[in-house]
Amino acid sequence: MDFDLTPEQEAIQKLAREFAEGEVQPRAAEMDREERFPYELVAKMGKLGFFGLPFPESEGGVGADTTSYALAVMEIARADASTAITLAAAVSLGAMPFHLFGTRAQKERYLVPLAQGKQLWGFGLTEPEAGSDAGNCKTRAHLENGSWIVNGTKAFITNSGTDITGGTTITAVTGARSDGKPEISNIIVPQETPGFTRSKKYRKMGWRASDTRELSFSDARVPQENLLGTRGEGFRQFLTVLDGGRISVAALSVGLAMGAYDEALQYAKDRRAFGQPIASFQSVAFKLVDMVAQIEHAKLMMLKAAWEKDHGRDFVYSASLAKLYAGEVSHRVVNDAVQIHGGYGFIEEYPVSRMYRDQKINEIGEGTNEVQRMILAKLIGI
Image 1 (cartoon, helix red, strand yellow):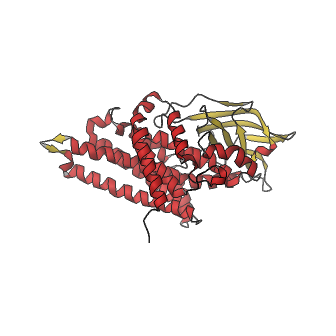
Image 2 (cartoon, one colour; image 1 turned 30 degrees about the vertical axis):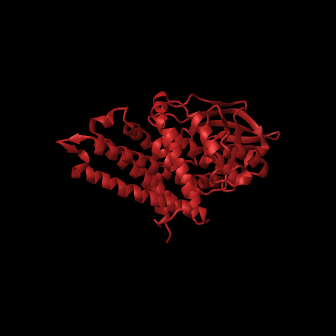
Image 3 (spheres, rainbow, N blue to C red; image 1 turned 30 degrees about the horizontal axis):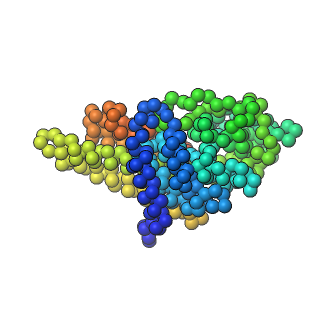
């Protein structure tokens, strides 16, 4: 059993760590306070190749692997969750559907600029009444004179309204299956499509520097060839996309927990009470040790899921388990980091306050903790 990273993976992790420490961390508090999208950081991540890590060079990528990509997300999340989710959503949700299901023409038109970081793309699955119950899709699309006519609403769609967003791939009911159930397909909707409108970005508790919006479609017309993959395979396709996306969220959760631990450890060494650093008190030291144990466990689970994906194995169980556990670890670690800071942890000037707000969505996005437990219950035979 070999736990060593390859030289290439180590190099990518080192590059991501240096970028996070030198470029992301100094901007994180200001971006969060101003709710400002990190355009300059996105451009730099594009030049560094982060958006193309898991894609082959023939599709505009750099030909790395899922493990390298997960490590990059983890290191960036260690500095700022908003920047990390911008990268994670761009790769796992925006670009990956084109890689998995796109035609050659679709890959050349859409995937190449996404893998190069020149554009962002949304993935429109969630609706106001279709979150965990993703199959309860209300958005409709029908063929008319060689075009799909789309009507409906999508909610909580990341990277869907920035100045560099190229469009959104959405799930829509395109008919009925032979068993009477809705036929769901994925349709590519470019940003300039008439009838496609984007609301103002949500004012969120966390991830304030990332872009998240509601999308509306009113007789939005796109060419018939904008069908992604096979008609009627949309449900299976988005489940596949979400399986991989859970590795991203696990990496983000691990990185966020690492960042909170870094802040708590340094604070505990610097802060003095009763004549000595508070790190010397068992009540604080034991919290820090527990943080390390949980982070290491979650990191290994995340890397195992990424390794299985890279080796063509069934990674659904590992990805769901890693996403569930890492999200809950980030909750506990950030909470303890705030506790170690005492009253200062409640003050916005301290990074753990931002991390506390950023963490919660890790237990909701890409399938809530409850949904993960439903998936895992089935996989263990219940």
